[in-house]
Amino acid sequence: MIADSFPDTPACSSLLARMHEIHDLDKAAAVLAWDRDMNMPRAGLTGRIQQMKVVALAREAAELYGYQDDPLNICQLRPGTEASGG
Image (tube, rainbow, N blue to C red; front, side, top):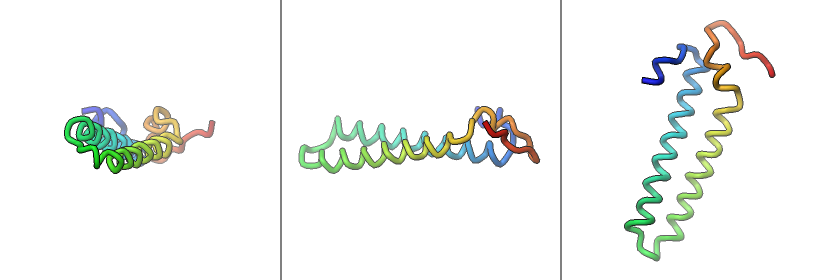
């Protein structure tokens, strides 16, 4: 599992949690798109498109929030160290 290859630090755990959130939002968007394309009656399209926009915005926010720090640098940290400013 990929998570096993990351150091066990609070910063890395936080980054992994945010990555999982982004992945979950991607899965929700895929289900909404599939439903829109396969099952959605015309009367429901406007509502579904609004839902898809909300999921897309939430994903963008999660991605922006999750990568403010350099994810490669932050996961190299060991307990008791701090990220270098840069």
